[in-house]
Length: 113
Length: 114
Image 1 (cartoon, rainbow over the protein chains, first blue to last red):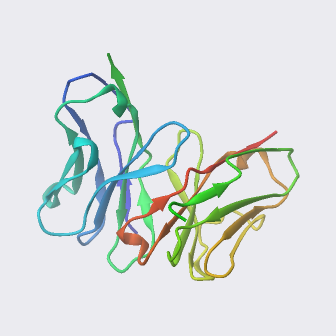
Image 2 (cartoon, helix red, strand yellow; image 1 turned 180 degrees about the horizontal axis):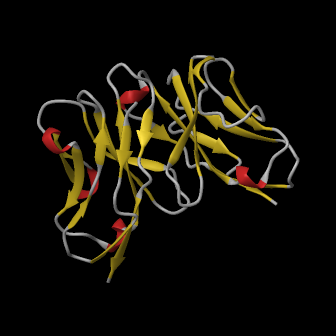
């Protein structure tokens, strides 16, 4: 079965600084990979997804992620963080032909002004 | 509808009472999922519907939990004899096809058992 690890429970960055949130997955083949964001009291919103092809994926709100097969990673990045990016971020993995996603435990992002 | 709708948004119930949580998926979405998000935890899969049938209910934590879906649309998650450990946010998601290609989530129902 597939699994997802988000090693960082909390991350604090200053507004305007760059951001990288880590995600590692365990699965024998190439998975589908996702990043979701959850603001307080809200459901999860899809930021971006990787299915195949170009390993650098662009998403909404200026986020991007890079699939690195050799490292089993799908880290989320943003060059310059805004205060409104403060939220919880979840990485998720799905398998081809499968029907459900497996989520990491999330990374809480705090942005200092 | 335009999005996935869940009701109620908040529910406080006494220990031992039964509760029903409702999910109205995006129109035309055949697959529907229930997840549970406990404080400080990730999302725990509960059950998956394809149409009205539930091919995967492996995540239901006990026989106090059940779910149904009618008309290939609205789903109800029922928790009987609620316990304090059932307190969590219950999230519903739907997809037009294979869930492994990504979900659209509702805003969730926050359940508090006192």
